Image 1 (cartoon, one colour):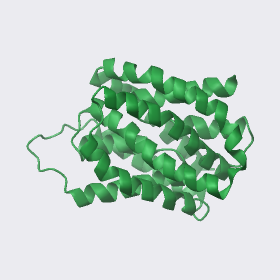
Image 2: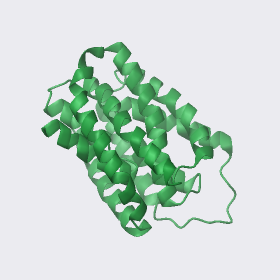
Image 3: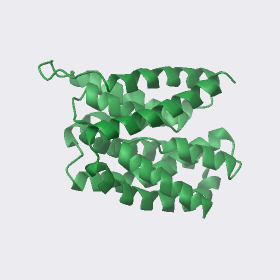
Image 4: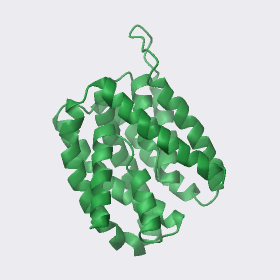
Length: 241
């Protein structure tokens, strides 16, 4: 029941904010199931995929998923997630945690910068590279893809915040699938542990998608920022040991 409720919270947060699934899944797998961090990251990606898929479908049905942006970001983010999963064991965790905390603060702050409609659109090659880098981060830490995706979609792809949230869930579903598949092929022994969390995550995602459509941009931005600050603090704490 605890696992199901944790998954329920994960699905709600991911569906409403377009981010935040991994920061619930990974700690639950470490604390509840006593998995090593590396194994928890791979298994957590499977849970995030379970939550992101129904959330993305619900957002798409409501017209909040930008297909053009998904096609630009999706394939490179899937490739990046595979690379990130393989690189996970090669870089000290404290280094990646510190860098992630810094980038997260800068990315979240960018949500409050006024967009200039008259500005030139971001070149497609830049969007492809950004998608690749965000996919690497998703696979590497098992968290954080959405927290950087939403600001990137608002600032670079010039999407309104509601569409950025919906599009983020579709991209998270794509990148978490490839990252989770890589991790499961490498070590399938923990797959059974994630099932109750994944079941709750699917239920939470289905409940959360309608709520996201009713929130105004101001409260939605404030909620996203509050959770992002908490995540940045946790990552900075990990970096400091």
